[in-house]
Length: 215
Image (cartoon, rainbow, N blue to C red; front, side, top):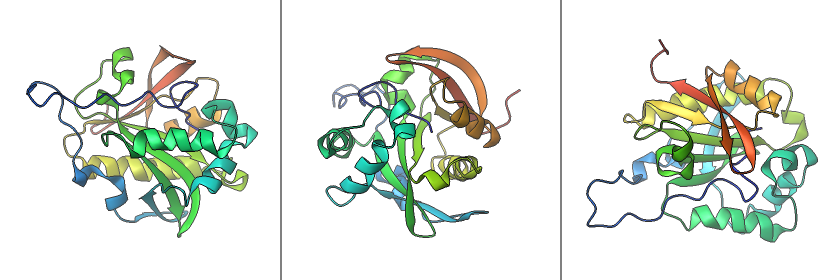
């Protein structure tokens, strides 16, 4: 569904802030970890996120990344080392982007990246606000696609982001404009199309879910 920002994956999180710089944006805290948010009841079942693990999840995620429908937008097809490099950049990073498996009734069926959009290079391409939270996702099994499941899970997670991150006023995403299925899912989940952006590697639809209805 919603692919990363460019051929190399999501834009790399900003580097660690200088401790002497007290004016920069605050880094994410442990309470912002989506793996700590618990179960989200949905019409499709009980949904939750857990942090992606290496090497335990590598085979599953590599298989998903090599599905042609996924690879067309994530551009991470190839041997396990390609997927591992993508994950390592986040797992060993500063916590501003967190890679997670999505479990529906305890069955892994999706991959998510929950990231601080205001700390990401994406912020240079739209009028970012402090604590904007971004989402990337893919539905792994082909049987999970094309039946409205993406919209259901997106709505549940966006609600949970806004509940667990009280300083966050907006949840954003930037799927490729060619990925019409993904854009439709975001719209059905309560996001609005705010703009189209020229990002490295793709033209993106900027999808925004506001804490309060957009005037």
